[in-house]
Image (cartoon, rainbow, N blue to C red):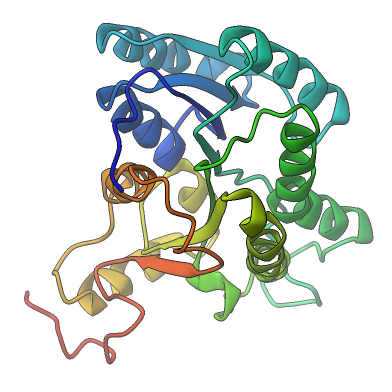
Length: 272
């Protein structure tokens, strides 16, 4: 059954830009109070302050913390904040949108002066995949993941496709999708749904860090049958729509939010 999200709380990991920021605003439009975690240099402070101002203008509360989402101390701090802010009700929506990883090839390659180290690979998979499990564990331990809650993890076509610099992130996305399936099964008796959202090619700060992004983006726009790339608001709308029910029957999936980009056959749908 559909229900109002008004007055509930969400936790967005990776809230300062891209899909995280767009989802924060969309949930705020639906009356959801926002707890946002981001890990940025001081240069991003202004954009975060603006985001908080926009959330407040929607008549809801917000609480943002700039800290490393992969650290246990950060989880402890923020979970205590959530318990206090929500008065023990917990979060209706948890969105895992962390894009912090190494973008270098595994092996020597022309044009590259570095190859991936063990530390970089382990850090990438820990932040972009394993941290989802730890956040869910700690929220559950604190009784802050109630029946009807929704957990979303951002994956990508990189789980099945390769770019020269994307190997560590591809591994992280594969692990993330496996974690989603496992958590969905283990949380089913508690009525909590867990899904991965596979966004189409979206021009975000994370994508712009990929060395091959310019050529890749140009190709993907011609592939999408809609004749455009995905925008963060497409993902945000999907989160709001999927969060408006108490049912946990839609769970354990990797859901494409890509305008059928992954399904299209080459550039046969090019509308330019």
